[in-house]
Structure formats: structure tokens, C-alpha cells
Length: 263
Ligand SMILES: [Zn+2]
Image (cartoon, rainbow, N blue to C red; front, side):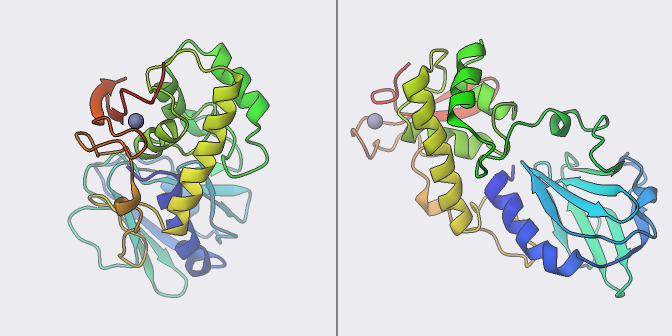
């Protein structure tokens, strides 16, 4: 599933293409219940923004277009095919296509800032690469939750945009066991730094290549060969040499070092 670096890479390509364009007509797959896509018609895209893994595009008329790529969502400028779930016809004659094989993606037109229809977005934690992601507050949140640390990160409440890949990477870097329920202040600060580090590095490589993920230009990121923990079970830990292990945690595959990541 695309996480912050992948969605931000899409945003950076989409911004110059979509900003200032008026959405003339919207078509959506009849089987797919998006949230009021028809409201987009006749409105102009002011900018292409992002919150966590959501693309949030302000439009004129106090509206926002919200897109979530889900697991397999891809945006491109045509042609459409059997997996096309939505098409936005623009005033320059082009058509922005939302293709989504597994249909976990989402498209919504909402009043700006009103996210009742999008509960994850409504309760989203701070952006990890902004000043709003405060280490003291992060430490307090981690101390207060009863959830193991990795599922808590995936909940998006303490910090936005971190999914399975970058949670495994950041927890390895901070030497914290993904099932730990005791992340004290010192380790919370280390995790805060690690989250920023893995996201910034992935962003500099336009995200991680994985099945189905493509940016607007059809390319995928270059971060996959730099992953240390995610998907590397059985390989030696580059820090201590122990064999990296895979476990299921909160229903998600999780790779960690059983020797140097501590509970
Ligand atoms: Zn290790």
C-alpha cells in the first residue's frame, strides 16, 4: 500500500498538471460507491495537497477533492481500461484516470475540512515531516496507549502517513520491538527521529517500488533496494548479525530483529 513517500511523490507530479484546471465532467464506475463525486463538476482545482496517505485538493467553492490510493490505486492521464474506477474530464481536454484493481481506494468530494465521511482523515495525527510532529507529545501518546507500538503507528493517530513498510524500518532503526507496549520517553524520541529519517530517505528516492504502485509518469520509486527490515526476513541484521524474523502483528506481516530490537 502506498505510504507517505509514495503519495507525496504522486502529489508532486500531479500538482503542476491539475492546479488551475477545471473539472468539466466526472464519470465513476457504477459498482463503486464514491462519496458525491458529481459535486466536483464545474469546479477548479486550486492546488494538490496531501495529509498522511490522502491527496487533499482544495477546489473553488469551498470544496475539496479527497483521494486515497488504497492498495492498488494509480492516477494517470488515460487511456482508461477495465480497472478504471473514475475519470475526471478536465477543461484542457485531458482525462485524469483513477485505476484501482482491488477497489480499496477512495474518492470523495467534501466541504473543505469536513471529513465526517472519512473517519481516518478526520482523526489523523500530525504530519511527520512538519513541526506539528512534536517529540514530547509523541512520547506522551505512546505512554498513554495500551496498543503495541507498531499497530499504534499504523492507526495514523499519533503520526500520519506511516504504514507497514516504514513502521518496520523506523522500529528497526530505533531498536524497538514492534510488539513493545513500553516505549518510554527516551525511546519515543529515538522513534520520532527514526520515522523522520526513513520517510525523508524514501522521499528522496520517490518512494519504494512494490507491486502495483506507479506515479503519474508510470514510474515507481527507487527505495526498495535500501530497505533494511521490511520484507527481509531470514537475512542477517546489518547491526548485530542475528537473523531477521517475521511475525504477524495486528494482522500484518512484521519483520524485526529478535536480538537488537527490545521490548
Ligand atoms: Zn539486530
